[in-house]
Image (cartoon, rainbow, N blue to C red; front, side, top):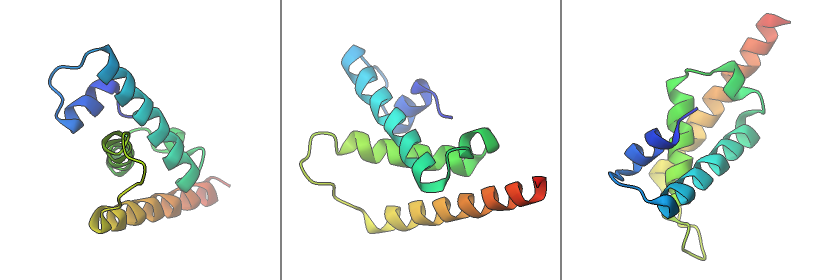
Length: 102
């Protein structure tokens, strides 16, 4: 799972005060919840070092962070397709892993 430092770097934040760190951490925690809800609760335990999973969490985190002060979420169609594709890939990989271990 990405760390706060990775999330700050992903957002291009060189210096973070307590408020910025708190907002980024909150977005990161929410992004993990979104990914678990979309893919499966055990996805992080099943793929702890998966690059696609890390990127998916960071994409969600950046979207949540960038839209934190708006009243409506503005979806970017290209990013939405990438997110949907990664979520489906991870779902299928998780299902395959469960079937192989059964």
